[in-house]
Length: 302
Image 1 (tube, helix red, strand yellow):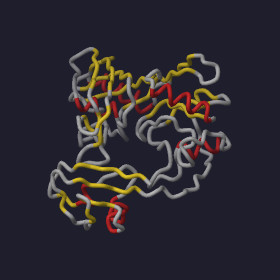
Image 2: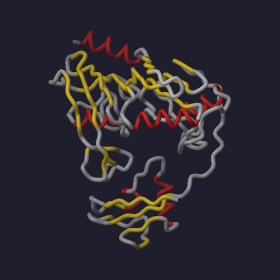
Image 3: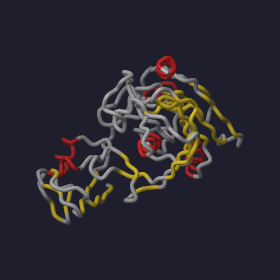
């Protein structure tokens, strides 16, 4: 059972509204408060407690319940596969692993069927084989480990920043620099707990390299290369420099001018050292149809 501590920097917001935890619904948070799993300044409080700046909130996160993850016959776009690993081109709209509200239809459900359950067990039954993730509405490449040896090797490479991860995106506005580096730490948003933000408080260093491929009327087509891999990193960093990813429902403009189903962000290139052969391998995924259609329209409008 894990405990997390949050120093409140908001005031006069109900505790159950202030606490926004990943994969935890508001009703679950209310239940945790009522079951005395949450303390404020060392004391148990009610769900309606109004938080104040400086409050120290301690949350006792219960152990996840065992969930039977079902193998499902869902088509996969497999770019490469051997006995150690599998590289998949994930479509936009697919969740990577089961979580609250998404226990079926995920990439893990599909992998369990395709790999006949032969996936690394390091991340447990909910996330078998998952070494790294991309967001539900981000399309593109990710590598999945079949063995624990492969999992440990790939995880170490990610930690050492030696994995090549290159994304392309369309962002709002005209990016003035042709290329640059965004070096800004990312942490949990102080009040919107499901969001990330650039902050010096309880954050981790985050570095994104970017280069403009093409400029349109009021948007830019950009390549981003990750040096680190923080949650929502590209989406947060592009917003930070004033150019949120087009169609991003969390960090972008509220109005969706191009009827996008999510952020225009695609994991195009992935490279790593193979855990068994020690050879460098690099894979590319073509732009999905939604991305090509968007670029065509932007070019026509320009």
